[in-house]
Amino acid sequence: NYVMGAGISHRQKSGTAGPFTMTNSWILDNKINHFRANRNYGAGASLEGSQLTMNQVVVMGNEMPDNTNLGGGLSIATPGVFIGQNMLFAKNLAAYGSAFHAREGKIVLNQVTVADNEANVRAAISLADVNIPLHVYNSIFHRNQGGVLFGVNPMTLDNQGPITDVIFKNSITQQYDSGNAADHNLVGVDPLFVDASAGGYRLLAGSPAINAGHNAYYTDADKGGGDLLQDRDLSGAAR
Image 1 (tube, rainbow, N blue to C red):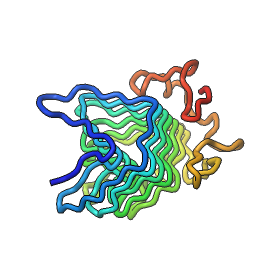
Image 2 (cartoon, rainbow, N blue to C red):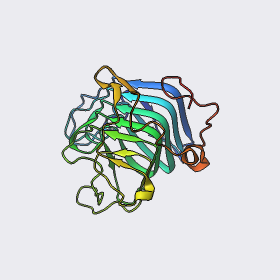
Image 3 (cartoon, helix red, strand yellow):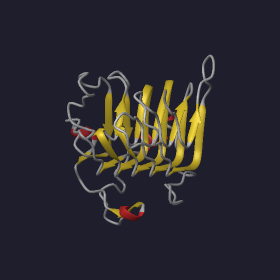
Image 4 (spheres, rainbow, N blue to C red):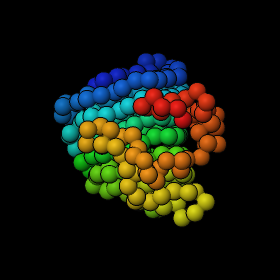
């Protein structure tokens, strides 16, 4: 048996689950202590749906300390696309995928910070299959810890071989380097957060992440369809 979603559980009961959208929310300090031989999923939330969208959501401080668990912040499963936009994943803990674990679907992250998450075994993000696409734009990966740090090139998944569809553009990565200067990634640099130890993940003046994103990625409908005139960041400031 298993536990799915200590904070939120949105599950398919029969047939195909419909779309799920969450905006302007915090998923904070949830914990699964349940020890089972089978794995548990998503201390913060476990989400299933035909399409999953999260915008203006903070996922922080969620924990599953056991070495068989997947998805400290989120566990997600969709036959469609998961779009995470204007999000923060910070200080989550799990064996696999301390920020989140994807069981199926296409993963699109746009304007997302993934920082200070800790995996007992492997990776800030874990994917159940090497064929799950992972597309990342205008985002930051920093100081995530694990048995094997997420983002090694070639990007691999346990012993299953390289992930087949990985895109990182205009992002700060820990180790992953696409090898293409036109992707405009910064590898292994400090984004200069205001006070991460106190949960302050805004950027200091002089941060290399300021004005380093690409507006066309942010507004693309397939990547979240952001509105540069109306949208606000997680601190309420204009984009």
